Amino acid sequence: MKGKVILVTGGARGMGATHARLLVDEGARVVIGDLLEEEGELFAAQLGRSALYVRQDVTEPEDWGNAIASAESRFGVLDGLVNSAAIYSFAPIEQLSLEQWNKTLAVNLTGVFLGMQAALPAMRRAGGGSIVNISSAEGLRGSAGLNDYVASMFGVRGLTKSAALEAAASGVRVNSVHPGLVTGPTSKNQDGYRFPIPLGRAAHPQEVSHAVLFLLSDESSYLTGSEIVVDGGLTIGLPHKCLPPESIF
Ligand SMILES: NC(=O)c1ccc[n+]([C@@H]2O[C@H](COP(=O)([O-])OP(=O)(O)OC[C@H]3O[C@@H](n4cnc5c(N)ncnc54)[C@H](O)[C@@H]3O)[C@@H](O)[C@H]2O)c1
Image (tube, rainbow, N blue to C red):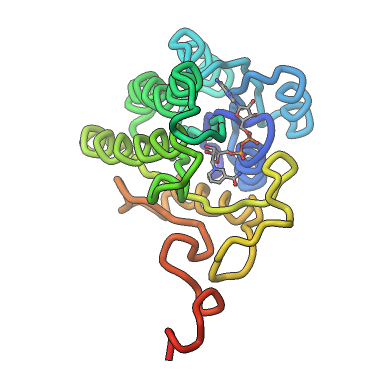
C-alpha cells in the first residue's frame, strides 16, 4: 500500500476507522470522510501526517467534490475509495416510515453511487484504482426488521457489479465486502447474541479490514465485480450444532 492514497467514508469510528488504521500501518495515506468532526479530527491527529480528516456527508455531491479535491491537493492523487459510511434502523415493514426508508437508502446506497461518480475521474487521472464498497451479509439474504438496510445492501452489491463493468477499461476495479456479525463499541454485538455462526463467534473488525486491504492492494489485481464474504460462514447454511443430530447423520 506504500504511497497509495485512499479515501475512507465513515472513517471516524467503527470499522471505517479500523480500515483507516490498518491502511496507514501498511504505508498508505488516508483521507477520513465523516460527519463526526470532533472524532474525525482527533482520529486523524492520532494517525499522524499520513491522515487527513474531511467533514463529509456522503449524501451531498458537493461534499464528495470537496473530499476528493482535498485528497488530491494534500496527497497528489486518489488511488482508492472505501465506502463504509452507513446507518441502520430496526422496524418491521409495516412500521417502517417512508422518511426512514429514504434516509437509509440515501446514506447507504445513494452515498455509494455519488462516491463512485465523484471518485472515478480522479482514479482515471491517477492511472487506475480500486473501489471497495462495504455491503453486508444482509446484502446476500433477507433479514426481518432490517428491510431498508437489506434493500440498501443488496443495492450496493448490484451497483458494484455494474460499476465494475464500466470502470474495467480505465483500470479501476470495483468490489464489495460483506461482513456478518462484527464486534465493536457501537455494534452491540459483543455478547448476548446467539446467531448460528459456523465459526462460533462474531468477527473482529480487523478481520474485515484485511479483506478491504487485499482489495485495495495490487495483490487483488485480477478481482473486479467480486464479493468477499467475511461472515464466519453465517450465510452458507446452518452449522451442525443448530441441527438435531438425527437430521445430520
Ligand atoms: N457492525 C456490523 O456488525 C456490520 C455488519 C455488516 C456490515 N457492516 C457495514 O460496515 C460498515 C461500517 O459499519 P460500522 O458498524 O462500523 O458502523 P458505525 O455506525 O460504527 O460507523 C459508521 C460511520 O459512518 C458515519 N456516517 C453515518 N452517516 C454518514 C453520512 N451521511 N456521511 C458520512 N458519514 C456518515 C458515522 O458518523 C460513523 O462514523 C457499514 O457499511 C455497515 O453497513 C457492519
